[in-house]
Length: 341
Image (cartoon, rainbow, N blue to C red):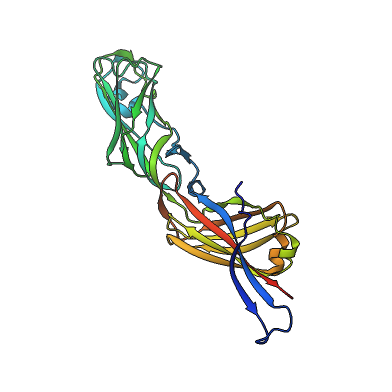
C-alpha cells in the first residue's frame, strides 16, 4: 500500500498581531503540507469486455463463428440428380462469414494472431477429390485488406472434419473480420446425391494480440487506485489547532477525455466525499477545500485511506489506447494551524 510520508513540511508562516508592540502572546498561523504518494487510473479501467492487458500488448477475444451451405445451394445441377446414385457434377461455390471485434472496439493494430478453420463435410462424397480445393481467406472487413489465407485440398472424406491454422497478418484492422471460402469441386465421384446435405465452416480465432486499440470510453466507470494515508502520528496538539485546509490534486492525463469523479477519504467511523473533475487536457490541477472539522476527523487516526471513482464524459466517444498508459494523480494535503490563542 502507498502511504503519505510522515514528515510535515513547513510551507509558510504568518504572524497576526493587533498592534505594533504586542502585549500578549502572538497568534501564529502555520501552513503545513503533507505529500501523498501517487495514485493512478490505469488503462485497464477504460477497456471494454473482451479486451485485456497481456504483457506489453492487449489481448482481444473474438468469438467463434460459422456458416454452412447445402449441396443444393452449392451445386444447382445436382437438383436433377437428387435421390439418385450418380456421378457428382463439377461445381463451384462460395461460403461467407463474418465476426465483429468486441463491442466498443472499432480498430486494433495486430501484433500476432491466428484462427483455427474447421471444415465439416456433411456430403456423402469428398468434394475435393480429383484436384479440388477450398480456399479460405480472411479480410479486414468485406472488400478490405487480406489478412490471412489457408487452402484445403483432398482428402476431405465424407462425414469428417478437417482443420487448418490460419495466421493473421500484422497491421491495422477495423471492427469486423470477413471470411470468404471459395470451393472448387471437379466432380466425377459416384455417390448418392442428397441436396440437403451440408458443408459447414467454423472459424475460431485465438486471442489476438494488439499493440493499440481504438475503444469507446463514453460513460465508462473508472476507479482510482487506493492510497493509504499514514497520518496516525499527527498528535492532538497539532490536529486540534487545524483551522482549514485543502487537498491539491495534480493530474497527468494521456487519454484526452474528462472524468467526473469523487474523492473519498475513509477513516474509522466515517467518510468524507468531494466532487472532482479530471480535465481532458494533458495536465490539470484541482483544489478541494476541507473545513477544520473535516480534517480533524481523520488526521491523527490510523486506517485512513484515499480512494476515488467516477465515469468518463458521455461525449468522449472513441479514443486510442495503448498498454501501460495511465492517468497519474499527485496529491498533497495543505493545512493551516492556528497557534497562540
